[in-house]
Amino acid sequence: MIRASVMGAAGYLGGELLRLLVGHPEVEIVQAVSTRFPGRRVDSVHPNLRAQTDLVFSAADDLTGCDVLFLATPHRTTMTLLPGVRPRAGTVIDLSGDFRLPDTAVYERYYGVPHTAPGLLGEFVPGVPEMFRDELAKADLISVPGCMATAAILALRPLAGLVGQDVQIDARTGSSGSGAMAGDGNLHAERSGAMRVFAPVRHRHEAEVSRLTGLNARMTATGVEAVRGVQVVCHATGTADERTIRRVYREHYGDEPFVRIVAHRKGAHRLPDPKLLSGTNYCDVGFAVDGERITAIAALDNLVKGGAGAAVQCLNIRTGRPETLGLGFPGLHPV
Amino acid sequence: MSQTCPECEGPVELAEPVRLSEIAQCADCSSELEVVGLDPVALALAPEIEEDWGE
Image (cartoon, rainbow over all chains, first blue to last red; front, side, top):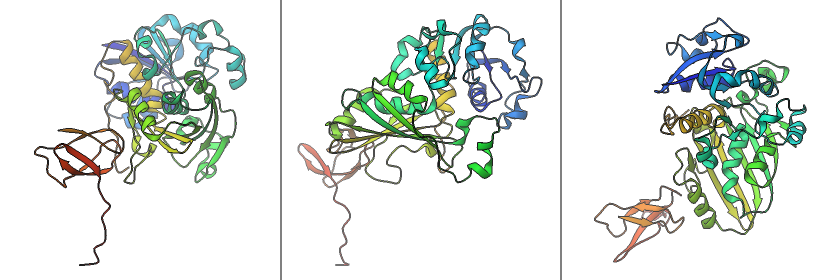
C-alpha cells in the first residue's frame, strides 16, 4: 500500500484528492491536514465522503512521515511550506502554482511576489503524463499544472510546428476554480448568472502554456455559470488541413488513457464540453479548421484532470501502478 | 473487417458478411457511411435522408 497524506485537505482540490484516494485500491490515507479544521471530521467539510472515511483533519504541526505528500495549499504559501515538509515524504506532488515556472522572474511577474524557494524550482517535473511519463516515473518532486493550463497544453501541444507562434486562448471556468474561501466576488448574488472576464490579459496560466508548448500563448479567462469545468478555445493560424490535424492528434493521443479526440460531424456533442466530464479524469480535445484558421478546443473537470486526478495519475506512474488505477469513473449523462 | 473512414481516416469496423448499402458510423468523427462496393469493400459518406414527398 502507498501511504499518502494531503495538506490543504479542506479545500476543493484537497477534497477531490481525498475522494479519489479513498476509492484508490492501493492507497492508505495517513493524514488530511487542515489549518482551519484540525480535530474535525473530514466528512463534516466534504459531505460526499460520509460513510467513506472516518478521517479527522490533522494540524499542520502534526504532519508525520508518508510515502507521498500532496500539497493542495495556496499559491505563494506552498513555497514557504515545502522546505519544512519535504523531509517527511518520499515524493511530493504539488497542486499549487508555486513550482510550475522554473524562472523566478517569470514567477514574480505572474504571482506578484519573489519566490522564496528558488533553489527547488528546477527540481520539479511537470505533472503532465502525456509529456513527461518517463520523467514522472522517477520524480520525487512533481508540480501539477493549472486547470486551464492543462486543457490548453493538451489542446495545443500537438499543433506546435503546425501553427504560427502566436496563439490566443479563450478560457472559461466554473466557480470551484476560485477555491473554497468566501470572498466578495464569490457571493451567490454576484456570481450567479455572471460571465465575468476576470483576467482579460496576462492570466498566470499563459506562462505555463507557453513554457510547455513552445508557443507564445496569450490567455483571457472568464468565470461562467458552472461549479466544475474548464473549456479552452484556442485560436491559431496555419496551413495544415483537417486530416493532417486529426492525424497529429491521433499520433499524440491515440494511446493515452485520459485524452480523447472529440471532433464529430453529427450530434449534440460534437466538440469538447466540460459538462460531460464532471468527476472524470478525461480531457477531451477537438478542433475545427477553416482555411488558415485553426481552432483547438479542450475541456476537463478543473478539480480532476485539472488538479487532483492528474496528481493521482502521477502517483500511479511514480509508484509503478497502472496509470488508470482509482480513476475509472466514466462520467454522467445526463447531468 | 476493418475499413478506413473516407472522411477522417479513422478505423471503421464492419460486421461480416458485409452487405451493399449497409450503413456504418465512424466512431472518431461520427460520420454516417454507406458500403458502396464489395470487391473490394468501399465506403462513402451516406447521403442525408431525403424527403420523398410520399411517393
